[in-house]
Length: 413
Image 1 (tube, rainbow, N blue to C red):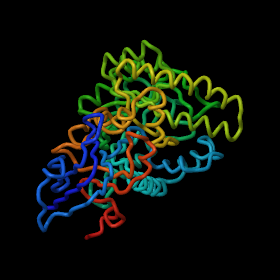
Image 2 (image 1 turned 90 degrees about the horizontal axis):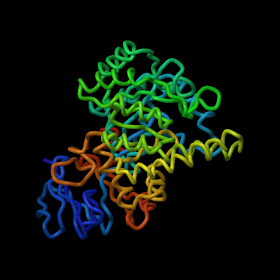
Image 3 (image 1 turned 120 degrees about the vertical axis):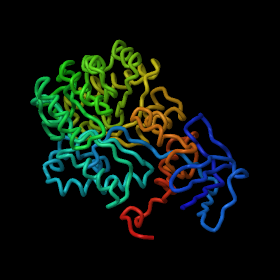
Image 4 (image 1 turned 180 degrees about the vertical axis):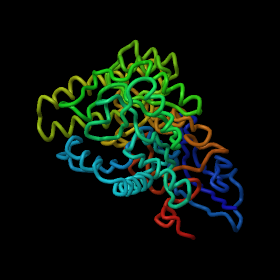
């Protein structure tokens, strides 16, 4: 029996808007048994590891609800490396090369405090293979949820530069491809309801609608029969409305929302993953490199209405959560939410409690409570005073294990 006590901290449980002062966690075999003031934590025995957190803040592990893990390292590249210029070279490599990128990226971002990822499409199901490697114990790592490969109409989003989607046209073909993805063991189904930015300006546009309501509805039917959820890539308000009418569970990006789309999302409890910082970063890199008509379009016709849409969703009470996509950063995503309208604690819960609810895993993670996995991060500084404190990670724990090199490669202790 592995026991752990972390004390002398302030704990942000995710269940309220403030800290539990001078408190800590008691963990047994990777499960939280208690979050309590130091005076009420159990007395450690010889089998208990005790960690003095020395005034740090403890937060739940962060949850990235939209990522493409095999190319996440791109967001660390200099600004002169654009999405259009870099992604094809990575995605054209073979699966063996891309799974090495995926593993390295997952480990790197776990060390930065993100303990759960939902990969929303990877070529040849690389993220699914990474998930299997972690769950089987070949290596350790974050909790990976995988959409396998996205599903798009012929020539739809994900079939141009990033190659993360399988093409299927018509109700019968979509049904078959969804069943193929489910057979392979995916956690979610990803559909392309509109064009996007990846193939712009030559091949696509986020204002275009792609899959029909009928095609998406059959995907939802098949996924829900297997207790799996469905997310849709959406640029236009019309694609969001079509997705909601089809019964999807999560809207990705939603750059061009209108009031009707927002109201429909709220009425159906459809969650929203805006990936603000990624969309802004696509613009910023284009602006830095070329300052072209394309970058001006992104600034005025995509980024500006995107912010307004997030504000509308917030004011309507739509569950809005964090995702980085390829070019975003988790901390900067939360900071953008705060800049638009969220309070700091709301932004932090968008990456923890609310994210877990949107992913359907809130019985396991998202808050620090008895009975949940001991996924938590020790921060030097107060995120409720400044979200920049989230850059000051002292240590990360996954299921009660401190994340170290030996743990990641699953070496015997």
